[in-house]
Length: 241
Length: 241
Image 1 (cartoon, rainbow over the protein chains, first blue to last red):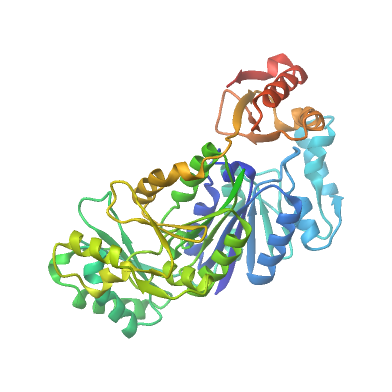
Image 2: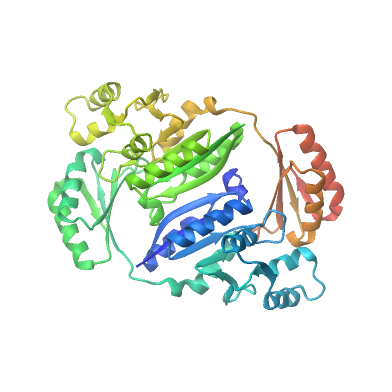
């Protein structure tokens, strides 16, 4: 079982100009792989803030995923922040520089060449059909902010994160949360290791609450589900999936 | 000028079951009001984590907005976490209890009554046409996780956050980011207080980069925009808004 932190870097998210699509995607994929995301943090493009938060997450979680701030412009400060987090200098990587030159098919300017500057000792992972590799420093995976590129890069590296996934069951209930809160509490006394979620939905017309039951142990999950269905009055259950 | 932190509380976000709609909404609204959101943090439903992060954000920012974890079930631990953050006991609030009784039109169970338990000394703000008030402890505003309810509650309290808003201009450019990076850098040397964003868009067919220029000073923003338009080759500019 491994843990993860997600660090979203970008003023555009904090100022409400761009909606972060990357953390929902990563949370969903990592859950499926059996990785526990314990924290998502969105911070501005400020080197010292990036450095502090990368360091803290790297110490605390098995994997850290950063998104954003790795392009050629003035506000792309992620690489510098990560280098500072680990006290490493930033240096030109010849392998990336070669790719940049090939991709540009000719002369490339200083701004583009900035993208070949990475922290000393970083590893490069092949990123499938993308010409730019995935940069890894210690346990920190450096992803781009553009959602399409992040997804392709994640796809190319996803298998290295695979652990024991959770099994998930949904129970849709037609009464209010407060009418079943006692039963949920009793269920957790019987199954203390069950991950039980209760989500009221006010836009839905067919049900009022979606319950989620999760465990990495399929037998335990089945027994907990049976126990829940016995506790709830039959007419309150719309469906189980 | 005031600052804000947003704290999203809920395992359902971290496990990828629910996409957080509340932080994008709050970021957008707060920006319009002139409030700087400096951090968004998503954490699990764990009392000690909630307490630590509420305390840290409350010390650091003018306003803290929490979302989620205030219902009647076992995983609703936000109120206890906030109470612990400020070293206050949780106690029954008679005004909320009365509303709960009126709303239920009769007997109410213990789980429902949990929603009337709030930290000692909290204030209640009227929440418009919602029967449940907005709970405020020091500079922490406690919002529900259900997006429709969060929005209604925010609408009822938004004017208290109004400051000097940013003016925003968009410039859509038809060349790659790296081709204009030098010009953007020079613009910032001339206008160091300009907030300048550069966002490559790969799904768009009409332009390649969206530039955003922001300032609280309209004259400064206009001068910076004029300067940018002079620096960029005319054929690279698709439109200015």
